[in-house]
Image (cartoon, rainbow, N blue to C red; front, side, top):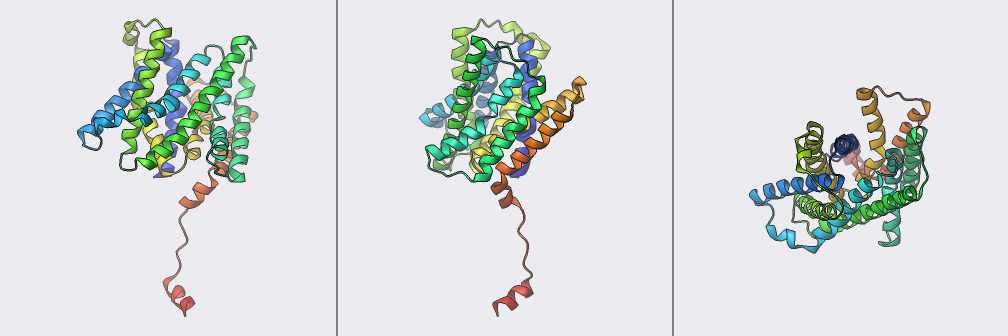
Length: 310
């Protein structure tokens, strides 16, 4: 189930970049559409969990939900949406891939959890793979806003790392609450904060929802991206650790390349293939401990066991 959920997370998040691009290019206000996506998805999931009597409205009054929503959803997506006005999507992908590395460093520095050497090496190898995958098509136009955009993305990833680690602590302390309900509550807070940011920075015209590309993009991001993808991600954090599910940031670029090849007749070269292989190797190395635990243990022959006892 963990491997299946991880595969689905990578597939879902790998396609949401295209959905976001379609919506923004069609005129959707970035902060408002992101806020609408997360708030609606969170509200629907939360009301469903209330209906099923698996959570109470009092969960929304917990400060943990506000902090998780502010870091895991608001900081990450507000930074990414704003920065991509001045930074290419390729460079944004590279900078976003620092997330798993930041999580490992924070766990070591703050929680005194010594990361296995293979996990750190795997993060570095995976990051190099993302660079190999993206750099051939990377156009760099250095300007003051470009530098600020890069810094903003890194700040957003730092917030993402804090949110991922903190959400693991929250799910452990509130083990009686469903991970889906916890994720729904934090998405509602993240969406509400994005609404506030949109109100201060954007002019929103409701007619943008009448456009088929923006409506389709928003529907896909809300249902598939947020309700399915983020719920599975939160579930994986509760069942494993913050680093394991976060390595989707390495796997999503190859998926994005595959989507481009299949639907936009884009081409790949030797460097692209090398980047994909490197990413896969790095991801396996990061998750070596978790994958080892998932492998079926060899069964010991019952008669042999009895003889050995004698």
